Length: 238
Image (cartoon, helix red, strand yellow):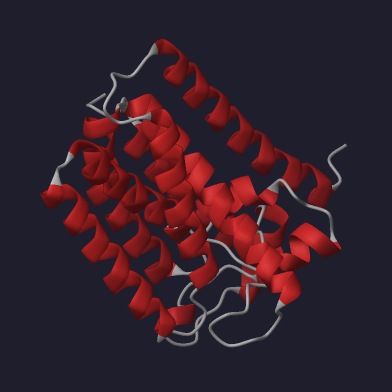
């Protein structure tokens, strides 16, 4: 299963599977205009599967979507580049922290990113650069969380190469996002801070323990529960 115990493969299979499911549910409403909207699931279908943001969280009280939104994507390029970043960063993080702590960091940072974006979308709707998102999905929040964890590792262990490289990636990606439309910069910032904070609590200088693996399992259960809750409440399955 590899150093990460199959977590990278799980992310890829789950996110691609959910992307295909949202496409299939979108029917004729699949977006086809421009690269950014190429093969984009409909907003309604993303909402049903667990998109987050100010509208789902505060208007519809779907607070659990901060855990599900990171596994959904809004288009072909969106999921393609996010999967590439996960393949790049998750194995390295797992090698340094262990698979259990990597799952916890990924989950916590994603939730922190979407929580911040949702709150800012409520407080500052429609404000360029500083406004949050009314509707948001994507793995970029937990990806920034992995970068935050690598920065924390460099700071705590004195590994300047790892820390500085992660900082460079984070800064370049964040600045790039400032000049792109439909990029959720608050999710990025919240994910980075959440990943750094989670890594600090988990202490990369110590070996991984069995309770970290149990915590990782709990995180995966919460994530699956969030997606299930979104589908159940959206389609009236109960």
